[in-house]
Image 1 (spheres, helix red, strand yellow):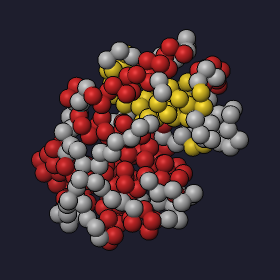
Image 2 (image 1 turned 180 degrees about the vertical axis):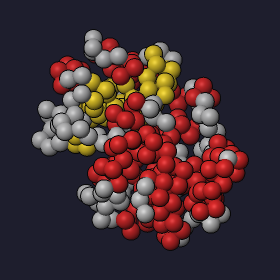
Image 3 (image 1 turned 90 degrees about the vertical axis):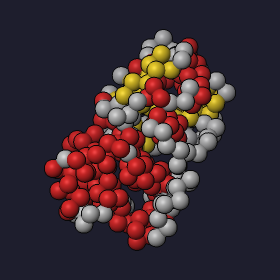
Image 4 (image 1 turned 90 degrees about the horizontal axis):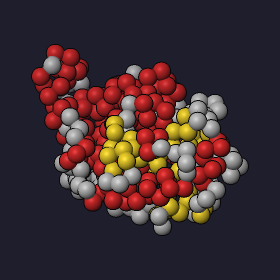
Length: 277
């Protein structure tokens, strides 16, 4: 079971400073409406489970903001200094910070268009991942939300669909990290070997433990997304599947397969968990 109290306090310092600054800029924003996503989310989750493969130090941070209307978003961001040209990145506590709005302002569901942007952006799964998220207590800013491991993976699959269309493949390594991570989780091992359902899955996957673990990940992602799963699987993995396999590297993980065929087998296991194939 994920125990966030085991997370290294040093990993909470940056999100704490940024969220504290955000709350000071808005009378409407509440800590419980803030969900950490991206690289810091991954590192906090992995650290809390005692893992270090796939960790990569970054100097920026990403948050999803569950908001009721655009006035709330505008009231916050107009007080912040923009960074770059994405129209969702701002300097907060001297840290480049992506502020991704979602929730009631999605039109249609899974899509938002911040007023400063000329085009819409995808937020598929953010609302569902937020509903399934866990509380993360910060030292000073209060308690924000953090996705479950499967929730984080769901956002990464959606991000792959969005960004790979523009030849941006960085999400592939994060998807690989979660696949490797799931194969090492004690609770996944216990489910596959100690429950009737898990043993059946292991048998169906030819006693290939890593593929069976990938299938459990896919099933857990579908449980988080619920009826929105079909919106993801309808397009998955997009026209650049070979690039996905090629970019699926995991740092600090000697056992991670270099073979593209083996990586494809793991993805296919996850897809079966999602209800594909």
